[in-house]
Image 1 (cartoon, rainbow over the protein chains, first blue to last red):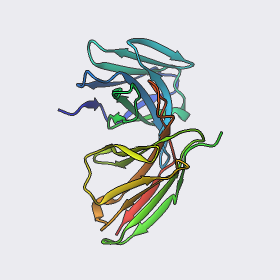
Image 2 (cartoon, chains in turn yellow, cyan):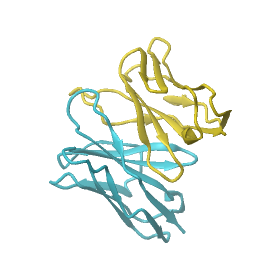
Image 3 (tube, rainbow over the protein chains, first blue to last red):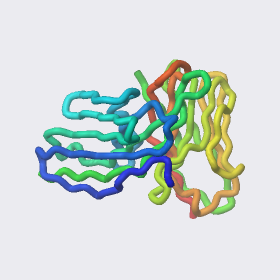
Length: 115
Length: 114
């Protein structure tokens, strides 16, 4: 079983739709959860970062973490064509000093928002 | 604030050759890590350096190596290149101390092995 599972899609939605992206994980040591957006032929760009169960909102983006179910989600409201990209979930566990520096990624979900 | 800078952006090498990729982290960041991204395997952790010391290594053969300099800049090297080494190699930097550090990625170096 992979440590992090993410539905690869592809996912195609009309402009203005609400998008839901999800990841599950098996390693209960994961404490930090991130969502990255990656445009074609570019590096991953950090979108959201959370470290506790619950919701975190930033503009049109909401990250949700449920540690009891080992499940994280990213919601995009009022999706725009410029949101078309691959979305990667990532997570990490703290080392003995409390720092985190190694990310385990999902495979990524390719999202297309059609005008 | 300048981001993570990687050079070269694109390169083509022949099987059996070796390659060196360079990464300059965000100013003040002391931790540099490297990832390999392929369509089949996704993003996989290669290794991480902090204050010139390798702290962790992923599950890659010994042909993959790296180092970090006193100014936190890092290089990774792949020797005896194989076709399967064709990938996007990403460098990421973080402050490296304290809980929950934010990790930032560079644009990557696209390596094609022919």
